[in-house]
Length: 166
Image 1: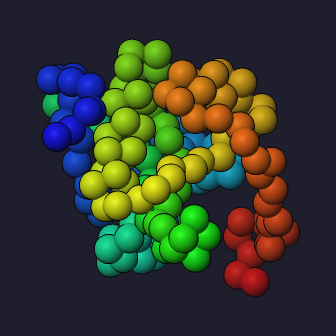
Image 2: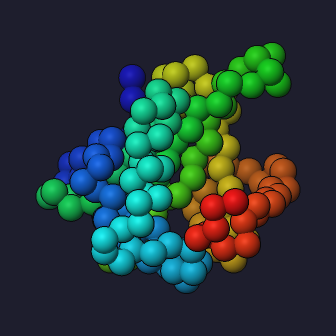
């Protein structure tokens, strides 16, 4: 039984390749994303390659919120097998975005709650996510959903620029 909150005007579904321009535009529509993403058309082939890898992996999902045929929210859900916690699976949520005009409307809550329910249905024992420390409203939002800042997240960027191939 799903505990996902109801929002009858929005349909949650898996992303389609044709959604890529909308997804990249959502990722770029904030001060941090604007420095990392390039929504100009035609999109970089790297986005299509990444989408294909995600779509072909049964432990990955790009979820979108669709409002009357327009993508207005998204997130990526990754299911990860682990030896820790007695060999349990965990889920990682990344790239949560909601269209600017719909922020604080409950759409982010709908997306994350749906992703948590999907993780639960797949037998995950934990859901984890990271959010940039420069996003205090996002931290408060995730805490309102029951997430706790129990660990210090760390990242090591392997390329000097996003255009680098290695």
